[in-house]
Length: 462
Image (cartoon, rainbow, N blue to C red; front, side, top):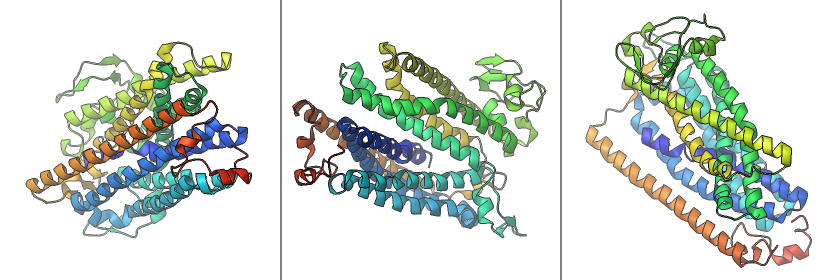
């Protein structure tokens, strides 16, 4: 399950956020009559479709694993938190329909009609994120049920089960995070092109729009990250203790940047900042922070798990801080000169920002899931009570099959993207100046409208 989620989550930012970024570029192209912007939007829509197809494979594996690997949890709690997965399933089908309409609409619909029919696509993606985050937030702060004498849930309240105390902080932190991740990844592709000397408007625009979106959202995400950490402090104090390596409940608690927790509660390595953890948690040094020893050892993460969570969280904070500096660098130069920073180091940093964001996505998942241990449903069901009783040999066989499927899926994804990129580069190099490579892309489903449509005036906005 860890391997499957860690792999699938790399596709999530593009499934949720790439439609919105593509439509933003599409709108710019129509509004300004910009053929380059429309070309970028058209090509991004093709990438979006390929990514969605791969997501079908990885997401389907996940749905099977919930039933095969976690029968205890699904059997007892499925009626309570399963509504979120139902929403996600409906969103998945709607997104597939809207992607098909949008992709083939490039050749068959009038420009503005095509754009307006594409607007439901990011809404369907956000709806899918709503369902998944609602289910995860419920696992962190379960609500909306009562327990009978045998410990089984009864009197389910769907509204309370969906809108749990952690839902709001998790959802907005997730949405903003995936949008800025997609923005930095897309911009990073064009940053590499700019570093290689491709200073044409195609690469500048392909870099500027997604990077601007990501740069605007970066400080917002930093604030949201601080907010969700404070929500964890209030709603899941033991998880917060693991995140910050707090051993005993106390005030004036120091903050450790990295470091390793030991069985006696000591922390080695890292940087110790006196009182900062209490200040961050409650805005004053006298804030009392709950420690890991406030609960029995069987009800809290182990010292190894706590160290893993702490490192994952600190990596997120470190990368986020660096991205804020990168966004400020970009904003300062843009406000002063209305151009990109001239230093090649800016483009180098921008080129790796996307990969750094994907790393933080992984770290965020680790923090959320490992920090909740040993509970799969916080304070209601342990992982040991939820897992399948299948023999180890069968599990290793299943794991091997999943690894092979995912290697093939991601290999196919990267191969298709490489071929598309090569085709586009040949088209751009072989097309006459200002022709936007349309003749060489005309035989593709997402290609420009046929000449007969152009003659009738439908292409006037392009």
